[in-house]
Image 1 (tube, rainbow, N blue to C red):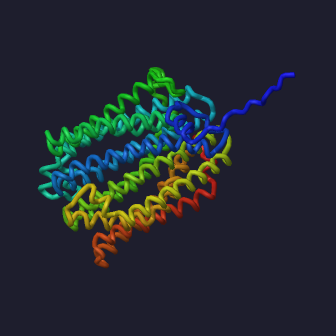
Image 2: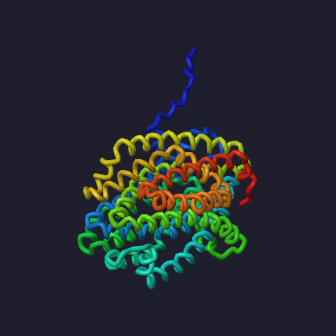
Image 3: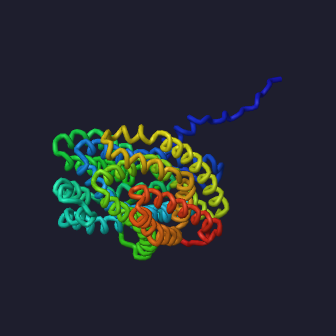
Length: 465
């Protein structure tokens, strides 16, 4: 008698899941292990955001060698560009929410149609911003409080970055479409390609054209990433394949996207504009302080971006599971993601508190600039655990299509509280730059606590997209 041995499916190890996360084009996140779902989305999203943060660090690394005015130019321009990032993120947020909801409903053609309508909206907005760049680049720097030296050196840099905003817009927007479809790996690969090009071009073009070369390198790198995205969006094998018919304007879809995007954009503009005001406050302490603040913010963003990538997983999981009529699974996904993000951010907080001088020293050796940068790193990173949980909650609201709740949270804490508080501490109580950093950490902590309280109420589960 023949013995028939039972067959067992071998359990996959960490590296097997890691490879699967990097290579998969689409995953159904409405069933199966929530932990695996978070992992499969988070790995490419974290790597994607790492690459986005590399953009910031690479630029400031090379530009800082041109002097304090050059570093200040990048800082002030980036502070203004956050308004563009806000618009791009707002539209991509709407695209992610709508595409994820349609994918959860198994309506793939509807998902492609929603993605195409979002692209139409983003392209139209981008043209208006380019016009501002052509005619008002110098005025933008002046508005930001730049001195004559910064304006003279940096106008061309600012002009190129504003005119080339289309690649910023499309990079965010198309990645939002891919994320909504559960194709986080594609979003990651496009950022990697863009950054590799930027890293190669940045030193070459800065050496040839100075500060202007940094703008050319960054814009070109992002442009190459966008071309890669467009190829896979129109010719790839993902479940989201956009055809010519999907670009026929659809008033109902455009209105729905605009509704989510407008409050989503306002949400990030409120936050971003508050950062512009904070940068404006810093200009009162001189170019060295602004340069130190810029370096610190770039380093903080370098580690915040991976955490933001992990929190992006919550948006996709919430959208797809609400589309599949599984609100409780959506909520469980958010709490698991928040737990993982808090652990990561605790580690980063310890890293910055203990090694601030080391990280700043990698970028600048100027003692006046370093003093401000080290102080900012140590103080702001004290609230990292709260930031980690809060950004997951914000992304969960947005993934559900409830962009209004985070908007009100940001409006209150960033404008009614943070800006007056920063002025009080830095100028009235004479804490100087330290007062600005204390205001940031307290405000971000309050944002996180408020977000958790409102998330627990569960009204986001009832939003229709």
